[in-house]
Length: 589
Image (tube, rainbow, N blue to C red; front, side):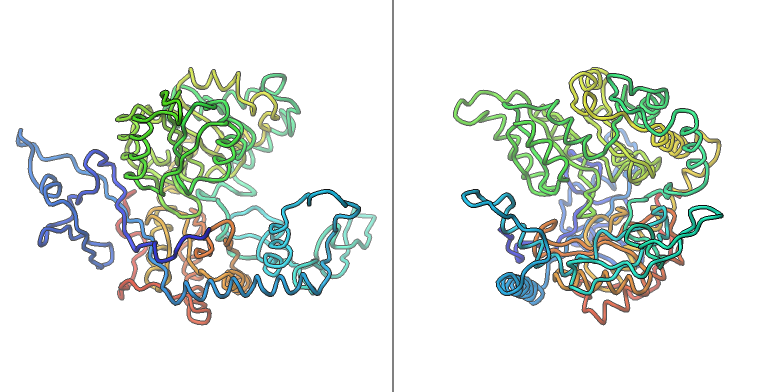
């Protein structure tokens, strides 16, 4: 059931490491009529009601006469309320699409394979899912799964394709000449080989946070050398013949990078969650999961058989209530204590662009003696002064998180995932993890790509390249978000997050924005129902350190233009009229 759109309130949430006392004013704020006056970067001033006594604490000395330690700058998270008119039109538009879909299903035969000779059998596929894919999603299918033929760097090359039957099939142009060798040239169908035409676009849709997805450079050269030495794959599991020196080196490097005792790596990021969680929790355990957690976490928890309770996104009151009830009442019916209680959250939530309130969660974890599982798939490399993720961002101790998980897909330009923690935890996973027992070991060139990029981030290559990329990503993310706010569109998430969801709400506008940007040589990703709530269709921009200011300005110019033609200026917040300075208020400087 779709939530009531009017229940979402416009709010700004501070993300700080002051977990013990909740949200307070930073040392850069001042009191005015019992409220915190927060100065924003470009002259915009926002006022938030807070507890005065906490604010005074930061402006006074302690009992020994020593000024308090400087607290890190805290960024805002914005989730603006959808306008009522937009909410009504979004519902009407979606129901109109559903009506047209049922009308098409009634009078037109779909161009897909149908089940035959199945009398007496229930349908093999869910009827609504089949209907939705054929008659609703199909109309905008050209906006997704676009074939590419280059590395997903700052720019990307897309293969052109067209459809003449509203998304049932795609055509790839006319046959092209393809040279098999210098002596043989033959004409081939582009559906088998090449389309013949390509479009080079600015890439705002790939998780290439630090820009290591490159066709040349030290990472690519090292990966090529790994292929020559070890081959492309080990063709075996880690527990049999799949362990090779690069995997051992990668696990040691990962543990060193994260500041943990040990780490274990896997060949697939999704499977790192879905196949390892059943090894950590079982029936009789309680899992408290954020409502915005990734599908891989949800699948792994369901496979474990543990009891799952969901708390509201980044809401510490909701989480503490569940923790308190779990400790007081125990398991249903028997009232026995839970075997263990596990809190599962992400560092950066990939659909919302928000950052977990980790210090507050650590405080609750310690208070109620629960375990903490932190998925840093989108935060490792992308956050923190040293690129070590959300722990580095808040300055938290890695030992305060029981299970650290992350992927190598986003910031390292590779594939796979890791779990890091105590040596006892990692030894348990080496024996009991389904991914370690049955999945193929990580490919040698994949492992080498991660090792090289990780050492660059740590500065072990003898250069400052890793530090420069971290600073560049932070600058790009803040600049892009501030400019979007200035345009007047609604964006979600934290000011420091490289994931920038732009709300377009209406299903038809998702396709219109993606197609329009494509005609202006900008490639991006649209996300709608059922991946998001019906009321929250969006365009998700992913910012990279490889983007230049000129590229971002080009994209922002086009976005500002289509915001008028497509009606995307939904924001009702006051806009800053001055110039947004690139690199201003840079915490990494």
